[in-house]
Length: 233
Image 1: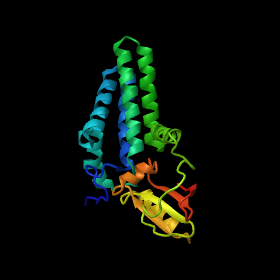
Image 2: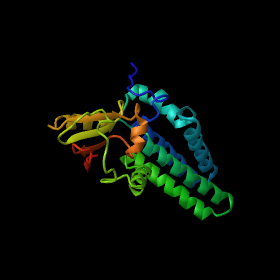
Image 3: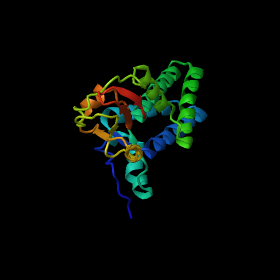
Image 4: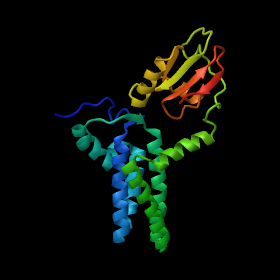
């Protein structure tokens, strides 16, 4: 019996089954390793092309994505659903490294090409085995470098978020209906005595942009006048 999905992989592209990027990383890591061991550097170019195609035209043009969502996921079930932006950025980094490695091989700089290809293989296999995605962490670090960090949002308009008049502290969570981490965080926040206001970023992307929400879940403690007291997540 095939397992059911909460997030459609072809239409709900702002989120993704957390197992899918790991499956993709395993594919990238193994093919990159094969390229290094055999000297078939053109495999690195094919990987770069395949990743770029998926990033540009969508998941249906990503062969590992097709294999995972059409063959693997229906049989093992859907994993935790997470924000798709960090793994997408990791794929962009992968394209850059794989393209640079291919150009280096083509230009005759085999040591440089092998080094860049080795970095891709090592980091991709690390992500596949442990779940530690260096590209995803780089995405979050860059978000902080752009000012998206604790204290960067000074105030929010509670009325605009639908909270109405609030005299005490309020918890504000930016969420997505298909995000598993969002549901878990919301469950914890609802056990708090303070009122909770949830903002669905799929319905209000304008608010997500205004308050620098680069990943979900994101949550704040907000004073009655709208001043942000603390970034919770």
